[in-house]
Length: 269
Image (cartoon, rainbow, N blue to C red; front, side, top):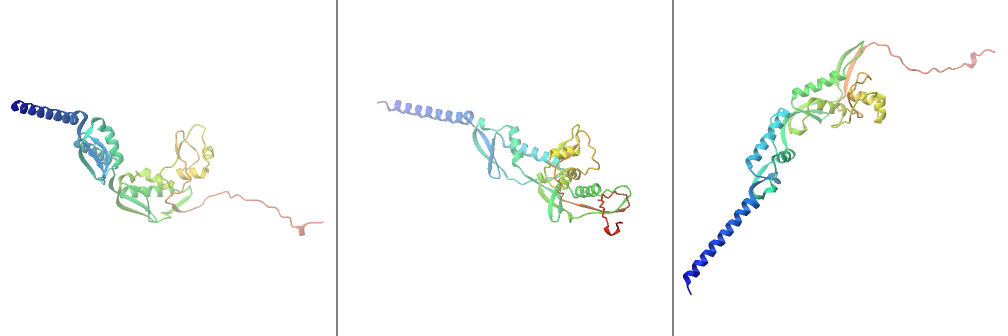
């Protein structure tokens, strides 16, 4: 028996086997599976991506967009981690989906001004300056007097303070948004667009409300409506009550009933 021949064949078999194993691994790594990164937010796996740099760029873009929106510096409160993996190509997430997923998962904190009413925070705006403008607008809008009256003072019935603190950026509203929330007592009031032929009475009747509720919620000065005017339809329970002290004179009709009483003693015979 030629041992040299057998040894040569054995070596060739080993080499061929190694080539098949290596080819299979390369096929698995490059065709069936590919190097990738699993992205975790607060230890929860969100998706798999091709490049860590790609995810970090999108993360920076989201932070930049949020900062431009609230005009404040933001601090990411989540822990974002990356883990090197091999993944099927069809499992890799596209950039648009990745951005949408991260936007939903991430939380940012920022310094904001809280409007505190009787110890309870009712709204957040970007700065103390905005909060002061908001309170001044409330006093101006709800402290107006009628002709012949003089405004002596205007104040809030509740204890209202402004407090700066770090909060979740999603809680911060625009001045207009905070104003609407304070005067209606809700975050998402129902709204209605005035159509041709509408009147306050008709709108109130359709929505099972009183005209006074609509007038109060929208701070209307008259019952005249404009086409496409937006109205808030809530039974207004404002967080802040404006109390105005006025003096003056005006003529007002006071309704009364007339009751006729016949004195029998005065009757003539």
